[in-house]
Length: 583
Ligand SMILES: Cc1cc2nc3c(=O)[nH]c(=O)nc-3n(C[C@H](O)[C@H](O)[C@H](O)COP(=O)(O)OP(=O)(O)OC[C@H]3O[C@@H](n4cnc5c(N)ncnc54)[C@H](O)[C@@H]3O)c2cc1C
Image (cartoon, rainbow, N blue to C red; front, side, top):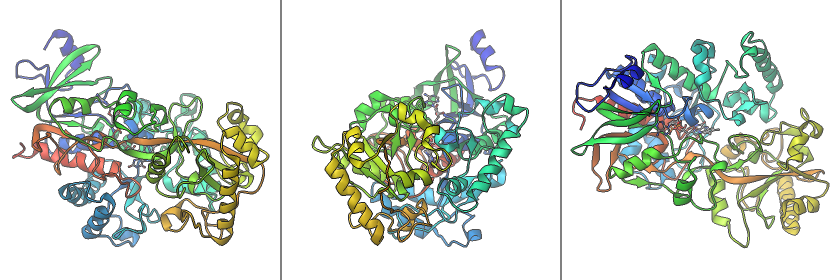
């Protein structure tokens, strides 16, 4: 090791006795999302010397920005919630949703190890989670689905425990913070944002807690009672600290080091210099997808596509996928993503996904011809698949237009704009001034502002209004199942997802073909080992999370179906590379 490199390592990891390396660990984890941190914890607890590296100056990635639900069928909280599940039911459901796109052995590994991974985190680390008995699987019509319980979410986290280290965590996406400040769990957000009983009192309590966090309030606007991604990543970070597992920020992976076909380490960059780190047992890529890379989006995703439409970490730019390809790895699902319609708010770094809004009554999503083209309350991935399927020169769907009336505006939120009863139009006029939200006295004038066909829009609204009266959406069956209704308004009858759009003024925002991250990446097996194009594992190389091809295939079976598998395969990868017989 050179003198300069020795100083930079500062004793956190061992020097390598093998010539040509600056340092040595057993397991080198690339990326600090929930999957990477889970892998690092388990690898440590299995007796490995572990180092985690992170490209940016903040840890947590998209995981920290997210709501961080984990979809884990047959988890140990379900019996306490009175919900029956089994590995067989989970496999039946996964076969139904993934439709043969994923090797059976990977699905089985996920189903078998997911509950074990959750138990491990809850019993042996600082992680605390809460089961969500009412959050249904996304496809209630598919055999093996459950009406709730498979999704769990982190409890609120006391971020005071992290001290200033909390500020080095990536902030949650603004969409996850009410008024750009308050952290809310999924359950709390549903109560507050869909106007459920108790929502206002809860909101007041959270504001009180936020305001009276003195003297922190004078230092930072970050909420030290975070939920979602900032809670789980905080708990994982604290657990790594308990174990003295180092995370090196500002340390991008640059190249795999390969000896005789085996991955033996990684060249990384630190403080402008190149370091060669030996990984005696394995390198685990956990570096997210390529949502932030416009060139990779252009190359792999359907068009049109823009990096500005992602809600995910814009620093996820796919380098490790390219490193794997260079080393002979196969890739899969590169044209796919964890899609969802997103809204781009001027001045905000990340797009917001329209998750709740699109199920709420008194709204529709239309194309440029003013036509509905999908059940708006369907899982978000299906909305964008429909956008691409219908997008053509004759009828553009990208962007589509989310249209609602004064009644919706008064009762419900839309993107960054809270319900009009709390924030009337004069309070949010900047959104009209900068063109984010359009408003007009008639549907015709709204159509003119949007460049949408007025006859088409009027026809769609009239049909919606008729369906709202009967409760049956004859075109797209909006509100027909428990998933659709989850974010509907239970007080609205006969269908909680349908209400007439009839009261002026009328409003609209644009909805783009966005995502929470891409889901194509290095092809892996059930042990998370990266496979070559010939189907052989590359010894010493693992991939998990969004830099691996998704175990969920082209589907999104339930809330948390990206982070649940990322953490599970992180756990599996750690076990595998430290197993005595590891290849
Ligand atoms: C607003 C929002 C809400 C969401 N809600 C949920 C949810 O509730 N449940 C769910 O399952 N999913 C959710 N998602 C999706 C989920 O957050 C992501 O799919 C998931 O976090 C990806 O995990 P990952 O470990 O693959 O990547 P990340 O969590 O993004 O971590 C990757 C890390 O690797 C780093 N990195 C990248 N390249 C390099 C390199 N070359 N060298 C070193 N480090 C590198 C990145 O900077 C990043 O910190 C949500 C996403 C968003 C944006």
